Each structure stands twice: as C-alpha cells, then as structure tokens.
Image (tube, rainbow, N blue to C red; front, top):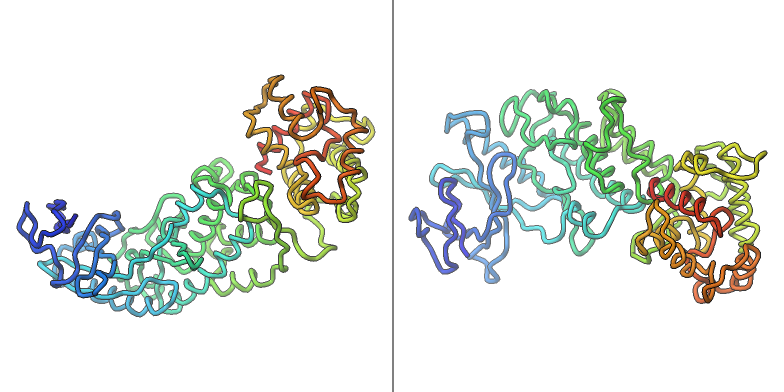
Length: 476
C-alpha cells in the first residue's frame, strides 16, 4: 500500500500508485520518499513508515509531517522559521549514535516534512508488556545508555520533553535509541523555543514533570521523565497508579517485581522528586551517582528467563532495615539448608516481634514488611541458583491457579510439586529437611524446585496460603 500524507485525505492507495486516487496529490515527496503506512501521531503532526525510492534496496525511513498551526502560529513565514531552526537542531543532535539520523527536511505544498532513519526494534513499552518487568541490571544498563544522550542534548540547549517507554527503542544489537525529538525545545533558560512558544506539547500524562504543565521545562524535567520510565519498567504499572495523590508522593517500592538495591532506589527517588531544586540538575550528576553503585552479581530468575536478580557484591553490605541477614547468608553460602531454613523462621519471628510466642498468626504474616521478604528471598534464590525461595514457591502456586482461598486440590498439587508430599502421603518436617540435606550435593539435577524454605509453610494450610499470598502482594 502507498499512503497519502495529506492531512485532509490519508487515503491508502495500491502499491504501484504514483498519485493519490482520491485527492490526486503526488505520493512521492521530493520525488523519492513514499509513505507506506501511518505509524502514529507525534506532538505536532503525524508519522509515517516510508521507503526511499532512490536507494537500491528501497531503504526504510520515517516521514514526520508537521502542522504549522500546532506550533503556536498561523503565520506561514514564522512557522517556516521555527521549522528550519528545529530541523537544524535535530540534524546536529542526530550525530549522536543513540539518536536516529536526520536524512532530510523540506517544505512541499505548504507542508513541513522531516525524514529520519527508521530504527528497527521494539519500544520498551512493548518489551515490558511481552517479556515482563525489568530488574536492576536492566535499569542500570538503560540509564548508562540514555543519560549520556540527554547530557549531549542538554549541552546543546535542547530538552526532549517526552521521554517515556514508547520513545525508547531497543535494537537487535541491544542498543537503546531515544526517538521522537519532535517536541524538543530549547532550554527554557535561553527563552527561545524551537517547536512553538509557550506550549506543553510532548507532555505525556504521568511521565511529564510537574513544571512542564506550566510550560517551564528544564533539563531536570527530562531526568524526571526518565526516572518515571524506570518505575514503569520495574513495576509494569502505569505511573498514575504509582503516585499517591493523598500523600503527594510516589509509592513504587511495593510494586517492583524483582528486588532493587537501596542505593539504586535512592537514585530513582531523587530523579522523580517533585521539587526541581532537589532533583538531579544534570544527566552527568545522575550518571556519577550511578557509577558509584557497586558492581553486581547476577543470577537467573526462578522462571529461567534471561533476566536477572542482583545482589550487591560487597559481602559485608547491610540492607536498609535493622534486621541482620548475614547469618542466613553464611548458612546458605555453605549449603547448610536445614540450618538456613530454621534461621529463616527465626528471622520472620524477629521481624514480626513474635520471638517470645514462637509462632506467627495470619495477621502477623499479613503485616510482614515486603522489604524483609525480598531480602530473605533474594538470598535463597542466589545461593540455590533459583531452586529454593519464597518467590519460587509463589510462582509454582500461581501456575497451579492458587489464590488466597484454600482449595484442597490445588494445595495438594502444590505440595506434591515442591516435594512436601510423596505418593499422596505427607512428609514430616524432619523428612523434608532430610530430603534437602541428602540432595544438597547437586542442586541443579537433584533438588525439587521450591522445596525450601519450609519452616513456616510446611503442613499448615492456613499459614502456608497466608505467607504465599503476602509474597504475591509484595511482588517478591
């Protein structure tokens, strides 16, 4: 198909057409660029997938058509000046390897057109929808690739203004490209706007910094949007659902799918703070804090996919909470599964302030801090290569259709899967630990996934379901 680009027409013509069968306009811009389909709308017009007929391989490209009236002026001469400035700035920016190359720009029949390199790949909105939430290593890689791009743009007095998952494209080579500078404007401090004066084009709900609503975008506005983008990728939740209006604060930590270090959390928190003076003032400043993060040790997720969970590499680093997990870490590192299982029970009692009683009620479990459950699970998952852990048990239970409501058949299937029942017979807790002890020599080939920890869920239906449900609520 050949797409007419006239805003009042947009008729889809047969491939061989050279003139639109509805409006009669020439379908080849500059006698070489031919639109094939509409990709979408950008802040100031419409975007088309196209081909360059002058290239032997009919090189794919993107045509962006701009509407002068959307630039804040009806005056064709002023609109042309604005367009010329913006195009020259995009040409300069496109010299960066993570920004699509600007191939051409021109006026034709009173319309403004940019022709850019077509970036083949998936935008991060698609990636997270299809492949699941990002972990810390992926967020770190994203920031390390995109922050230098923003610094490059900001040093040239250009603010993107519309950073969101859809405008970050991951190529087959794992390079991240920042696209759609259509809404970019000069730094507000220069008092010169490239794409319109005093407009808020490009401000995507949820991702835009508060000051953009008042047409006062600044470099830190892009950092805010990048931080919010990271929150969406970590939680698979829309930004508006992560912000508590009653508290006027972000509530994203309880929604992360995979554990995230406190230091990375602090970096993201500073990027998304509402007050601009308390926010990172430059991409370089944010990148410097990112570079101070310790190197990570990566392990496979229990699901066996290609993403990873990370723990800080320093063995003596302590989590933010006052609970000491070092003994559990030592036991797991030594492969002492029975002692580690009992230490897990001890930790849960300490966290719930129930050491004297020696047991937990359903209410106690419902109030266990998500951070503590993540810390415990992270250690189990790391030192057993994804075989044992609370998250592993939760995944199995969910796969079987388990819920907060007790269903005998599902619970028995779950216990069969994790090796707490054999041949329809319940094992004692001692037998469960013994099984783990004797198979600890080769976790990968001998153990049953989700077998441990068992200390507080084994053979107690109500407590088991309460704990697994809490783990699910915390997105452990």
